[in-house]
Amino acid sequence: MNAQLLNSYDCGEWVISLVSLPKHGIVAATSDGHLLLLPHDPSQGIIRKFKAHDQTINKIRAIDDNRLASCSNDCTVKLWDFSNPGTTPLATLTNSHGVPFLSLDSKHGLLAAGTELSGVDAELVIWDLNNLKKPLRSFIDSHNDDIMDIKFHPTRKNLLLSGSTDGYVNLYDLNVKDEEDALLQVINFESIHSVNLLADSRIYTLSHMETLAIHEMSNLAVEEAVEPKPKEFGDVRESWGCEYVVDLIGPGYVACGSNSKGELKLFKFDPATEQFDVDDKQVILFPRGHGEEVVRDLVIYNDMIYTGGEDKTVKVWKAPSKLVNTTVDFFVGEKEPADEEMVTMEQLVNEEAEKEKKHKHKHKHKHHHKDKKDKKDKSDNKGGKSKKEKKHSHRFKPY
Image (cartoon, rainbow, N blue to C red; front, side, top):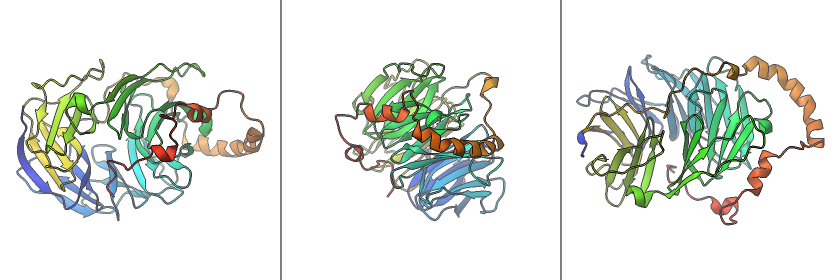
C-alpha cells in the first residue's frame, strides 16, 4: 500500500525530531536549532519558525497539550508554551558539567534529560516541573558514555529507563535516594539507539547496529532475582527488508528505511504478543521517501503521516488505511499503585544532610550485597572488546 504525498515543507536544515501538539499542529526540531510549527492542514504553509537553541536540537518531547521540552548541543533544556506566540522559553535548564543534552522524556510531572559523556561519566538529570529552580536529583555514576534515550514507565511513576552508547540500559527507582541502590537493573546489550516498555514489565532495546531484543524487567521484590534470557531478534535489517530502523513507535508501529533504494516503510506490530510480521499487504510504502537521506522521525495524526529527515524537509502523507495516532507509550495501564508515590523535592533535600554524614562510613565499609557496578564489569562484554573499542560513530548524531 502506498501513502500519498500531500506536501513537503522546507525546514532549512536536517529535521531531527517531531512532536504532535493536537491543539496547535506538528512541531519539528532542526539541526541548526530551530523549532517549526506545521499545520494539521497540509494545504497551508508553516505557521511559525523561530530560533530556539544556538546549536543542534537533539530531541523534543510534549509535556502536555500546549507545552514541550527541547534539548540541545548548546548544553540546555528549554520549555516552550505554544499557546503563547512569543519566542521566550518558560525555563532554561542546564547540567553540572556544561555538556550537550542528547535525550529527553517527560511524564508524571517530571522531566528527565541525559547528557553527552564528560570525563568518565554522563549525567542523567531529573526536574520536578512544578519546581524548576534546581534539579530534583541527578545520576552521575550510572553510565560511562553518552545517554541516548530515556523513558519513564507509563504507569509506575517511580521507575525510569536510560540507554547509552556504553551498551547498557539502566532501570532506576526514583524513590531510592542513594544512586547505587536506586539502580534496580542493568541490561547489557549494545550501543543503544532507543529503549522503551512494550508492556508493564517488558523492555525493548534497539541498537545502533540495528539489533533488537526484548527483556523481562527484574522481579523488584527479590534483590538477587535471576534475570530471564532476553528474546533476541538479532540484526533485523534482512528480515524487515531495510538498511536502518527509524524506531519502534507507540502504540505499535515500526518505521524503517533504505538509503540506497530511497525507500521508507511503516508496518504495524503487536506489543502484547511481541510479533513482527512484515506482511507485504500490510506494509505502507512512501514512494521515494526522503530520497537517499536518512529519515529521523515520524508521527501520525488523524491518518496523516509526518516524516522528517536529513533532506531538510518534513513531508506530509495521506495514509492508505486507517491508522492510530502515534504515542510515546506502547500500552496504557490501570490505576497507578498507591504505594509508588514519588519522593518529593523537600524529602530529598531534607535527607541530603543525613546522606552526606553516612558517605564516608559507607565507603569505608562496603555493602555485602552484590554491587550493580560489579554486574556491569563482569557481564559479557561482546567478545572481550573494551568500551572504547565498542564505541562507534552514532548513526543518528548529526555532526
